[in-house]
Amino acid sequence: VQLVESGGGLVQPGGSLRLSCAASGSIDRINVMAWYRQAPGKQRELVAIIPTGGRTNYADSVKGRFTISRDNAKNTVTLQMDSLKPEDTADYYCNAVIRMIGLGSWRNYWGQGTQVTVSS
Image 1 (cartoon, rainbow, N blue to C red):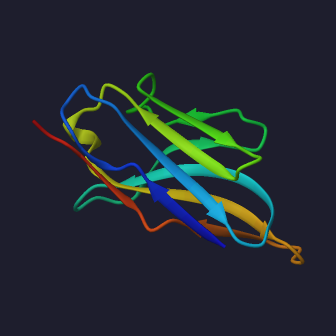
Image 2: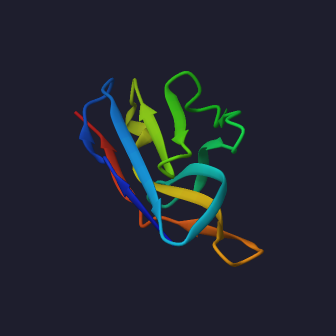
């Protein structure tokens, strides 16, 4: 199973970016999908999470500015980031809890990360 992110880059304060993550491989089912971020010198933190049922939750620092969504048919999760601030600068990581075909257990998977820089 692989998680591949795309959509990072450089944006000015107040701008928008859209991150996407696609899961591929021998996937039976995907449970929770989420986005985390890690700024230089800081611990990785949860940004947004979306369970199978679709009830989302966000870090307080991004509420009202970021929107997480998923497409269960395509095994993708997206993070729409609006009104970006310099403090949103970080490496962003896709995360998913996945059960592979033929296996009964769920495993936690991470993408390789995509860099987001908010600067004028």
